[in-house]
Image (cartoon, rainbow, N blue to C red; front, side):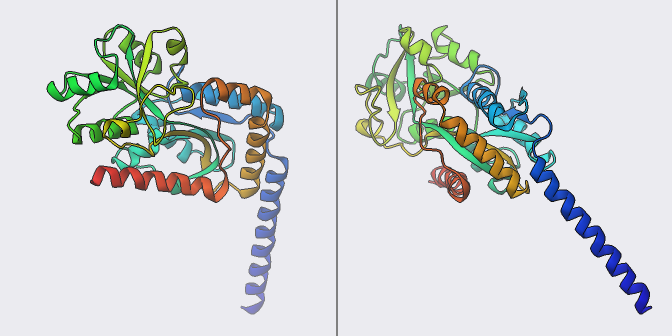
Length: 317
């Protein structure tokens, strides 16, 4: 009996050692095949452009191709569910953005902060309300005054229900400025909706609609931040108009599923750091008004948890 137990223990130890060696070897040789990138929103939007830009730049560091697939739907949760349920081996990475984190606090989907390991938060920007150039409401004061007198008559194109777009509109409604949320899954359709007269305004970051701002088709009327945006110094904050809505900036990160080996996460983080230090990335983030010092490690994880808690607190008030 004792001898058989010893043999079994020895065999188990050998097997465990072999598995451990195999795991270490996998981490050492990672990546040895393409790494998939899931963009959690449709083609043409800010997340898509960020994901594709980062994939291209990371390919140079990792030495493998990074094919990109768009898995939109449910305010980004459809793509994140796919990321979460794929093997935690570093061969699938995805975009994780604050719009989706906000939706968790709103009860959308079953994803949680602890389901993901954030590689790096690499973009952030406050959001604005933009109106078309031919709008009868050329200032936030005029827009808000009309919305107060005509609840629901102002329609706003957003990225979806449960996002901070939706939360911001609810906070405005609490202050008496009631506007109708009109969600669009496809970014291109959302951008075009106010210009084509389908909605009265759009809630968006300036980088995502930069071409329409520069082309004179969209006018920024209010920024939801604690201070005016340096690139749009004439645009008032909502606090200046008596409605203090800030801290809901739209940030974008790259993540893998929880349980991905730390050595692999470290390799991905190094590739992202190299990418964000490149001139190509600096030019890209500057043109989209999204440049930040990347946030990694525990601070990145805390950023996601804290944002979810902030949205939950806002919704509870």
